Amino acid sequence: MAQVKILQCTQTDAPELSVITTWMYQWWGEKEDYSIKEVAHMMAHSVNAVRLPQTYTIWLEEKLVGMYQFSLHDLECRPDIYPWLCNIYIVPEARGNGILYDCLLYTSDAADDLIG
Image 1 (spheres, rainbow, N blue to C red):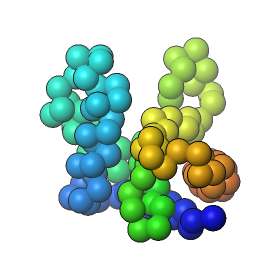
Image 2 (image 1 turned 180 degrees about the vertical axis):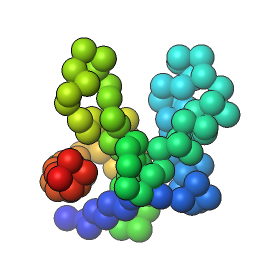
Image 3 (image 1 turned 60 degrees about the horizontal axis):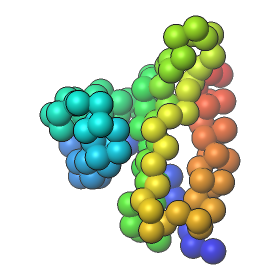
């Protein structure tokens, strides 16, 4: 099985940020009438090292194949539940390789770190 690597994106000038911004725009931004600039703005504000929201990139054999985010809230009626795992995206050609399982193992530990 190929090696999956998960890295937190903490720099607004990270080259992978433009790639994942395009994914998010094509996946939901365009359908919800956001401009690419608006999605880029949202993504730029989700690359925090120690506070929410946070963005993580998923790499398979040194190739960027996905991303996910932790958010402070997602369901208005349950503000007591956080962090939220959201915007999980894996490129179609990398799906079916167990990547999501590896991500869930990693995110469980990362979420524990966030809430102490």
